[in-house]
Length: 507
Image (cartoon, rainbow, N blue to C red):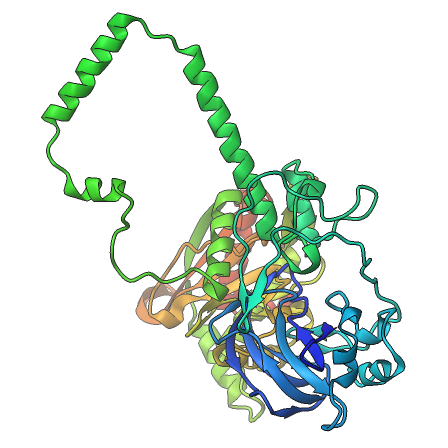
């Protein structure tokens, strides 16, 4: 992600964020202009829709420029910093002498056909590709090169005074970003899929990303424009088909006049119609909060969910945990025991560890259990994922839950920590509530909810007693199973909570 800079040195750009992400917000700069940075040293902390991550620079040298203030949103490929690579007295000279050797984001200057030997030596000091949230990797043996005759896009974002300007709507005919016989450059396969699902020809678009790269925003704008054109055409056709006679016009005008004269004054509606918006504090739906909003909205739109619940006597489970922690070994958390129960239940009812492929109209049952758990942080709700939870014991689960929870609170979760879940455990009892009907974490098929564990009157062995009672709820995708399967899963979980020996018999 480096370009030769006219000001000397290499221009390091915001690298591919992965997971279909196309932009990030600058949260905190970790270096100042004039600082000396080492290879792979983090230079900026950014917030994506997945997590807060530090971006390491693959080059060592002196920081000569920064692009974007804290709070600025940058697209993938936008400049971050310029680094003068090499000795202090000659850093960046080779880059300044030959500005024409700039390359595509992700292509080093040494690989450009116009690069000289000194630049190649400097480029070799870099560590390779930058993977946001994952670190850096070795540079690939071969990368694509930019054709010098590639046409510039009309909607490419500009750069002024160290900040990035977003491109506005483009009027008139759009220009094709690639020749008709070449591949269309898009930011991710998700964008290509979105266009294909809506029968949109990518060759008719002009990308607003660097080097004409087509971003998701470009596709969404084109779809909105097409919908607006279709709506106007439909209105015109409907208007042409209506030829009212004089009587209907007269009666319509009379009705409108009557409605106007009899309607009370409505200053609020008058204000709204004039273009003003209601007051109040406005909180942008962006970053993690925006991603959560989008995911929950999609889940509610696409998943026909249902919920069942049951009260369970958790007294014996609490006693078993106390006995385990009194043995002198590592302490076992309650959520780890509940996770062990979940994985055992999913082994018996694998329908709930699945996802729905809507395009193929197939239910995909998954072999591994990657268990997500809801964690509330200062930045909002996040769902870290415990990989291969089915293969972990209670001690390993406790350690992994603790690690991910601490990383979530500190804002250090990587995109890999937040993706790939197959089932979610939601302990909303920590908020002091008994029950809930949560929204399923798309594209999963189910979520187990656990309320607070509190002393309540309970009939135990034929007599009324005070027991530790918890409410368990299961929200499930009704496409993957019927109520009998969901009820069987929840009943098994409740049996293990009430009698932990049931779990031991099934392991």
